[in-house]
Image (tube, rainbow, N blue to C red; front, side, top):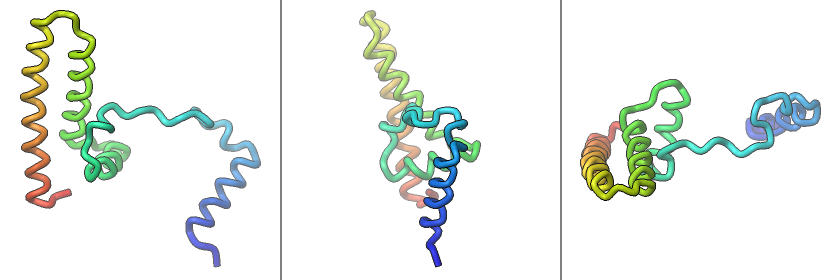
Length: 110
């Protein structure tokens, strides 16, 4: 009796051979990059990704995305006063993220 993984592989092979998969948008292309993925701690990546794909993104995911956007804006900014203001916002956001993650770890709610 084939395992579940073997059955999935068989279905994928059959779909690829019949050309069915080639009709899928993005077939053969790399998956789109999720903003904030690299900045998300390893132990929270998959649970957050599953929740996001199910249509529910916890507030921490949005915070990681905001952090990534702010870091990119700081890097691209040419105005020193704007950089200082964005760095202050980034520091505040990082503190909020750290407190939220610590609460999740302590309460073991994830």
